[in-house]
Image (cartoon, rainbow, N blue to C red; front, side, top):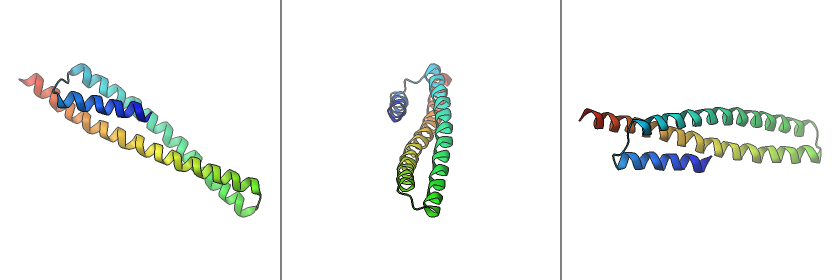
Length: 114
């Protein structure tokens, strides 16, 4: 997902930099932003679910000192941290695409008004 997002960011930056953006590129970027919005929502839901499971496993550790509950909690904590990093990258990339969309809209309008 990060590779696709970084490729789309690079593609949009290149279109804006070379002033070659057109209406089709604008529509394509809007379509990809919708895709990343959906991905962001799904990953937010999964991240919240993993976080809740991690908190429950910590409560289980407090209530019982089983070795297995400690291992489960450690694995869930690692998974939760990895999901936080992934969601952070996805969120920042999508926000970057929003800014690039604004720039591309300005570039296309400027091009069509001449």
